[in-house]
Length: 560
Ligand SMILES: [Zn+2]
Picture 1 (cartoon, rainbow, N blue to C red):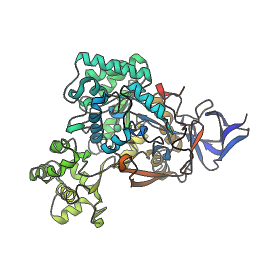
Picture 2 (picture 1 turned 45 degrees about the vertical axis):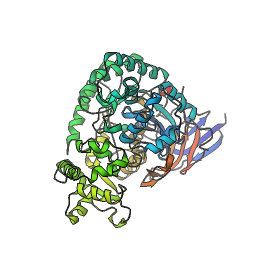
Picture 3 (picture 1 turned 90 degrees about the horizontal axis):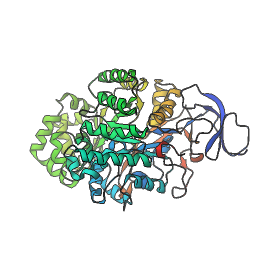
Picture 4 (picture 1 turned 135 degrees about the vertical axis):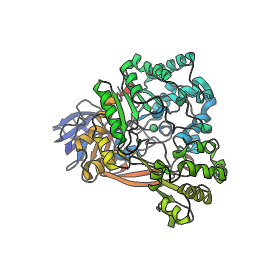
């Protein structure tokens, strides 16, 4: 036969974790047809001498639910070798949504995921769907550069059944029955799971808890039961009160379905606390239960303005701030009562916040660039104020445009290394598509390969590729992804292991309505192939974003 594409002379790392081997890979009709030896001619050939040839990377923790409807290239994930993404994480999403609740959903995503409401309104236009199956159809009709799978989110689900009371109370028996039917319908249509959040950091419209936080455990367990009845699907959850290891173990035991939770980050319970969490995870795994904490290979750095103070949203003192729209927030900050309460609750004297202020710099200050990259602790000391007061002063002096960057969690690299090598964890929490103006970890794959494999030698290349491909694909039931093997869809990345890595972050204004976001460029990614088509070569898109694109909607976890 004549191959469509042949990748020659590289080292094949197939995703299983087994050692790399020299060989060629051939592609025909979107699938891998030869691996190792590929003697026939090809229409197109990529010379991969000195390069690694691996499966396309899988990012199981994205928030592209809205972006996928206006950005068919799903930037920036494919820049970093990602060829498959899972959406609906943390229980957020756009469906099911009744038309009358659309603005509530937009305002929830604005607060909880730092998505610009203007960008969402402009990007979503007339919506064009309300049920979850209709949403999947809309995503599929739109088409995308890379493969997409979606979980049904508890927050829109609850809002569609309970209405605005979803932010106030647990569901009653009838409402649980109604929600179960919607989960069953979504699973039937091709959802890959069900996602929820009980995190106190998830604050939605009008400063209210996101709907899923008002669910009790019985409700969550009942909805997860639908996965057990369907005999497939994963549950993803962000931990919070009464929803952590023991509850996940119970759900996994009852349903027989895997649970992946967010997130096990270094420093979350103080120095060394991650070891207790790892021991708990090991004890659950020893019972044979498929419960996987998600870890991150990136420090959790948040850029924030006081116009959008997500990182403080769960503090009582920010109740009045989150309850008003952005335009009203300066007035709250100018109130001396707010100032003293913020100091009292989050000043330098508080152990956790004090440590975070030590890891905080001014990242942008319109009018006086000399302040940029300076420590807020130093600046506050020079002015004889607390960092909380400094931040409020700079915010008010700049029409809330002053920007700060805080190292919140996952900053101790020795602790992060222990999380990355642990056999019971999985990579997650890129949050791609969310917190767009505050952080960017959609580049986690190139950071893992450059920093943790090449520079720190914490993981072997084979282990890292396994953690980026087969392992997440298996946990999330993406049955035809994550592996280079004959007969598999040809999602392939060719990269230079001596160069691969990520740039620092830069701010661009390319979201709908001109909204800004942080992005990072990749180094050393030679080619990205999706379902047999070359999507990118040497950091340049090869396909017209407005033409046919090779990504597939993975209903039930596969394109079959
Ligand atoms: Zn998330």
